[in-house]
Image 1 (cartoon, rainbow, N blue to C red):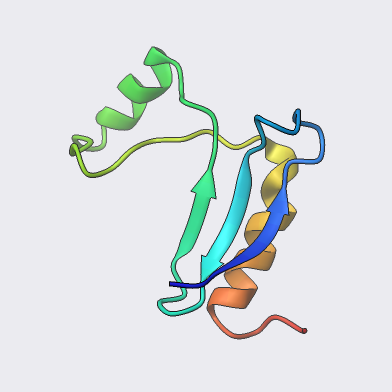
Image 2: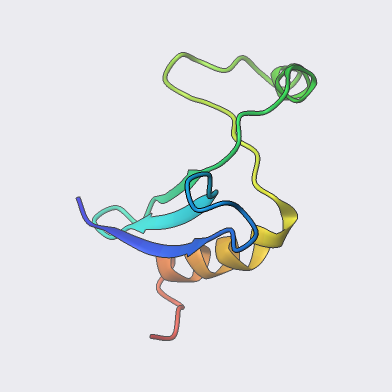
Length: 80
């Protein structure tokens, strides 16, 4: 597996950075984020359960551009 790094949250401390990658073999988007609080998890569970093999993470809104770039890389529309 080769992860292509897209971006880190520029406002987080070095050791606690939400980040975004794209898996170059599958084009899956991989994110590192903050654990959500209980009310966020509860709200997510209103749509459906969260299996043990899945998780909910929170990214700051300032990471929207990084997610857009990751989507462009994943669908092949990114300009290199």
